[in-house]
Image 1 (cartoon, helix red, strand yellow):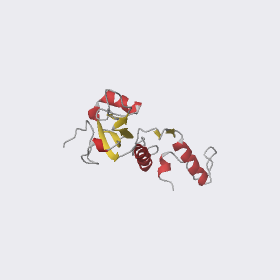
Image 2 (image 1 turned 120 degrees about the horizontal axis):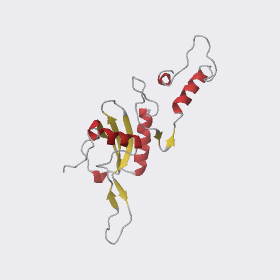
Image 3 (image 1 turned 135 degrees about the vertical axis):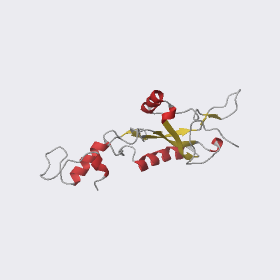
Image 4 (image 1 turned 45 degrees about the horizontal axis):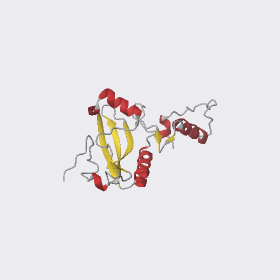
Length: 172
């Protein structure tokens, strides 16, 4: 049976029956910049039975869904869906697996610190798992400075340079 996946590219997972899975992990890539967003989406929702409808599940809007990110949705509205690649990268069979796999994917990709060659953040994600890590890049730089025996807020020793956010990715 051929399934309709909306605007989602399923190359990474192949053809699948949406009724067999609970949700998926996805990426949205801005084609001209290479910037990405990583997220999760449920394929269906559980609900209470009613006299009219005895079904316990209802399909979600996943075929038309874009993102939970306001920034990404604003960019899609401004530039159009064709400017973005929507990819399903992993399938999950339950709620716990879906939540865990999203976190795993975000940490594996280092979505809060990864940068493009020009220094722009590679990912649009600003949080992981409902936690705001807005100061992560600055705090990582501070920690690396302290480990090198330097104070991040005091003058540097002669011949040393201050670490930048980009240096966080290269300094061991």
